Length: 152
Image (cartoon, rainbow, N blue to C red; front, side, top):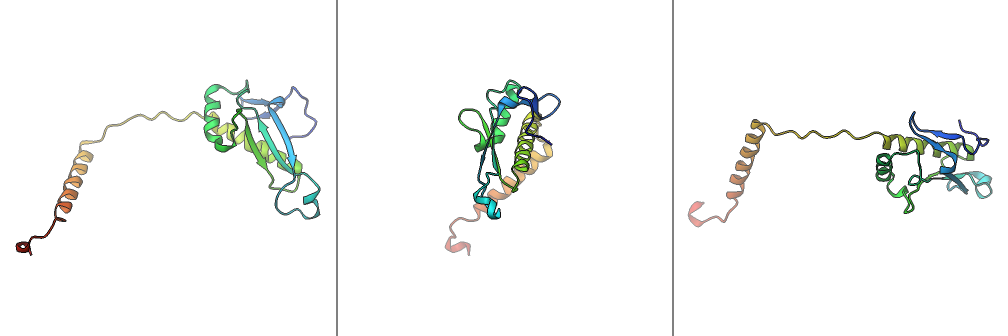
């Protein structure tokens, strides 16, 4: 569980054993949440918008940054930041935790390099099946022509 009293230059978010996100790379802003909240909904800013400066981060290798950009989709801004919005609960502290957990999960997914595909050749039997299916299909289509008066 994360708390407010973390020191500025201490590691804040441990993604995995190789990637640690520093405090200066994260910016949090708080807004009023949508949805239910009773009397608090109009007074307390419980929704959290977590901004991670991914493009400038020295802790992320370039391949991870490229995969993170692809995985983030519309959460990736033009200036290279990832924005995560959390407003599930009525508690600001819990929304902060949820946003940080989501960011860590997204970076973990980006840190996994995809497997390289090894191209394979089709077998002789599969080639024959494909050609047989094509010839049968062609035969069916050739029967769809105009009917001559003597063919009935």
